[in-house]
Amino acid sequence: MKYMALIYGNEALGSQATPEQMGAMLAAYNVFGEEATKRGALVHGEALNPTTAATTVRVREGKTLITDGPFAETKEQLGGFYVLDCPSLDEALELAAKIPGAHTGSVEVRPIIEFN
Amino acid sequence: MNLTRPCLNFLLLLRGQGDNGVGMSTTSTHITEIVEQIYRQEAGRVLAGLISHLRDFDLAEDVLQEAFIMALKSWPKEGLPNNPGAWLAVTARRKAIDRLRRNSTLAKKTEQLQNITEHVQEAEEVDDAEVYTDERLKLIFTCCHPALALDARVALTLRTLGGLTTTEIASAFLTTEVTMAQRLVRAKKKIKDAGIPYQVPPAHLIAERVSGVLAVIYLIFNEGYNSRSGEALIRHELCTEAIRLARALNQLITQESSLSPDSEALGLLALMLLNDSRRKARLSPEGELVLLEEQDRTLWDKKEIQEGLAILDKAMALKNPGPYQLQAAIAALHAQAATPEDTDWLQIAVLYSELLQYHPSPVIELNRAVAIAMADGPFRGLALLKPLEASGLLVDYYLFYAAKADLLRRADNFEEAAAYYKKALALTQNPVEHSFLQRRLAELE
Image (cartoon, rainbow over all chains, first blue to last red; front, side, top):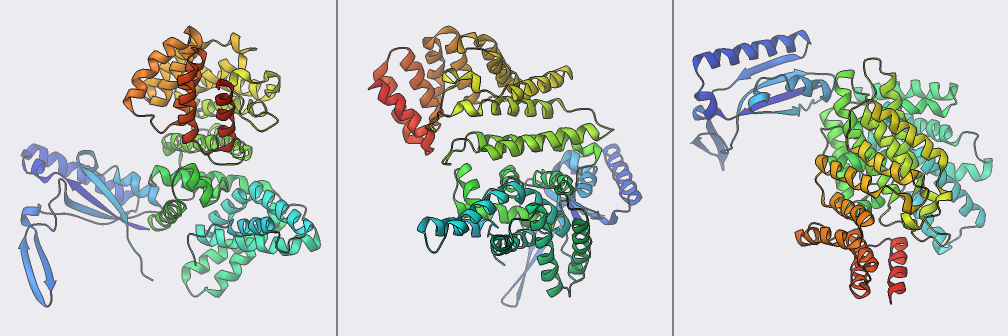
């Protein structure tokens, strides 16, 4: 089964990180990537620019409305994601707990719908 | 397919017909009773096997229901099969094959079909109910999975492993049948959609999963021990089921070479055995609740007490205390007292104080206050109840009013005692508890 691990965190804290802290975080993510690859679970993963770079698009009655920022203001923001292929939720949750973001923010694990 | 329909519905229907006396001969009523009894005994095990092989709660419930309808038709004519549980399992599996063949266009269904066909052959060859045991254990870990909300875990375990109807679970949780049905539907959907596995967790996950399972087992036991709405105060089969599950769990932990015995899993088993040992003494021949101090202690099951004490010793030898072991130790002190006067209430009060360290709870404070009242007299107990009552945390808890009424009675304050018995009466629906409280009230007046 495929799962998306959505990584949420307080991006204000991330923006205050020192270069050393950033380096440590990237290293931690590399370790996770290697672990997930070794298990044959890693399908895809990306890090996202902060919500200050986000633009929201809505189309209503044929008109496109473009606004600055994310769809909703929340305490924790989506900062990245992985797509993980796991035999069951247990393995997906176990991997999700190894994502560095789970230790500072939270990781939401959502099963991906497979159309067939 | 109606997802909310419990597979026991048709039995309730038959029960209803029996009450109305519509075309039910004595024989068919008798057969209905037998089928109902077998449902209670076998449904959990049969259903667990079906769910495990079909990976589909609703399909499993539907085909089990069909198998029961077949049983009602076939058994009166052909007599009871040697192994009714295995008969139901095989019949239900055949029904599942029929259904899946009709829908076999989907690749997934084909896979399910292959899985279940293999198991039908297996079940026909091995006509032994024991083949389902492991499936139930897998299912309890599925039903108690932390990805499900706690109330959903309890409901699902009672529904699928305890064989309770949605109505019974709803009344146990003091909620409506509609709410409970929705809770079950959502839980089953989450298991399917999120890929919650049907498996005994791997060794490194088992410890954290066990404590979740223990909580659910204890709730099942208490539902059986203190049925809040049932005709009988004690629904013994639920207690037996909870004890059986706890035994199986302990056995599994022992068998897992990478694991050491779990002191709390043993503690819970000891606690349930010690409480269950008083079963025969808890109800009078008229079906009325008998208080611990008034119970005929010769009716206590000595074998269960001995087993409970031995298991508690084993648990405490692991030197890893916890709330179940503390509660078992309290039950053990009661079980070991030859007369109510011999009870070590002081020690019990100390154990309740320790229990409060784990679980700060107004109910435990109430029990502690009662223990202190037993050791030091009703006035100290009443003093301890004052802040509890003022907190308003137990405002809907009939046992608080019953306990306070009892202490007031002991303190010879009959007028206030009567008022508190009346408050307790207004808060319980259980007819057994009702008649007990009414008897107490009548004694005062």
